[in-house]
Image (cartoon, rainbow, N blue to C red):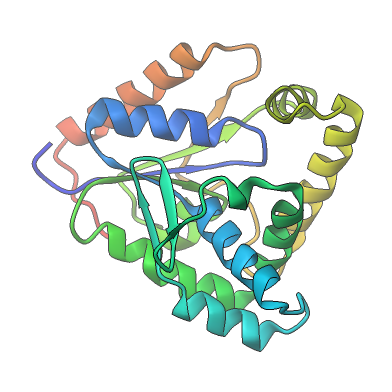
Length: 222
């Protein structure tokens, strides 16, 4: 794979995007980009700064100024390792609100696109195949039943499944109805339902897709 390749993986919360995208990137030697971590980083900065979630202008300025680095599973914000700090419930709730602001999304989309200028990437999020890289070589919409997604997230966080299910339902509603880049499957994305499937099975299905597309010699453009 001599040409730079973009693998775009979209899907709702709890579908397994991060796990699969990270494994695909490792197998192919690509850079893994967790776009959700970028929104979480901006949200963390906003909370520390005392910014109001309704102050869209200030949040956009924070997104523009934020120096975010993603490499080796470490999230750096303005030179600080915030890998653990961005995973708190408070930051998660704020990130969902920050991600709905069009100015913030524009700022971070430019940062996301910049990664692909120097290397092949596996990027996961909710608008990668529709907005960030509409001409990505490989587009996957990774999904799972609401019950399965709640079970997975609850297992990860230790929270009650019922509470997680409500959170996921609310997150889905926000993601799919927001004005800026709502969650949707790109027309040319391959739909993959991970319900009842092992991580290995999902990984192999996507790897086959990547290798098939790459062997056809298709160009990668933004």
